[in-house]
Image (cartoon, rainbow, N blue to C red; front, top):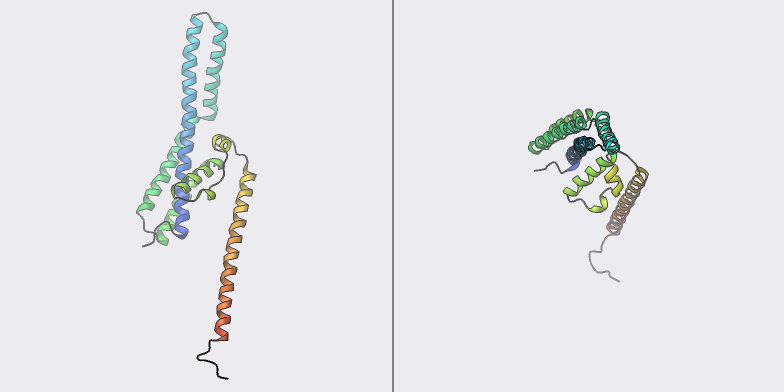
Amino acid sequence: MSDWTEDRYYDTCFAVERGRRYHAKMQAFYDWCYNLTRAATALTGTASFFVLLAHGTEIAKYLTAIVATAAALDSVFRFNRKARAHEALARRFTDLSSKIAGWEPTPTNLKKARAERLRIEKDEPPVRRLIDLQAQNEEARSRDVPSEHMVPLTWSQRTFGYAFTFGMKRLEEWQTRGTSAQTLIETVVVRETTVTAAAQVLQDDMGTPSGPIKN
């Protein structure tokens, strides 16, 4: 019996798992930002209170500024709201993944999976491309894909890709080189197959003597 690792079924299943990993990573990042700003607000707020009691007004000014900055960051970027949005999307992708695990790989089920995936993606905020590629690498690694087929992300791209997208030209050039190499390999294979087939046809046309040649 076939499964979701074959042909076009594989692509849909892989995309769903990549989406689940992507939103889980984004949720974790925004939760970390939210917890950091809350901790900074609580700690510096408490510290500034005791500093004021000790008449350390200069230090209290800096601590108060940190509290205000943390509160402003949370107010502007809404870390908790973004974390909850990604959590909901990750849950929807996980639900779809569990459905796929129970579905037979038929054209009807493939159509259902694609439609559900598109409904989820419709509600997605703009995708952070570097984190999406990181999620792609993680899913590929879980499927024992060779490392040479992984997208070569740098440490800075993996670390700062949550906020910035950069270095895409290098990745595009890597992809182009990989595509060219794959095309070359396929061309060589096709050529070798053609030569072998031509030699076989030539041999058949010449024929093989059925007995010894008489002088």
